Length: 67
Image (cartoon, rainbow, N blue to C red; front, side, top):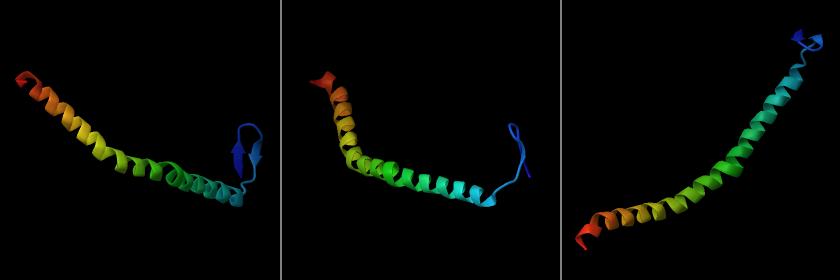
């Protein structure tokens, strides 16, 4: 039996609990496929360019007094 604060004792439906867990796993897979993978692909594309820009700014800041 499962004690609920609103309805008192309720029988536990184990199949319903398993279904909710499976649904949570599906949401996790969707999160990985729809958000994390495209974000990683964008990062792989953008990071080299960002590193190059940071390098150029550092060189400019260091070299500015000698110009």
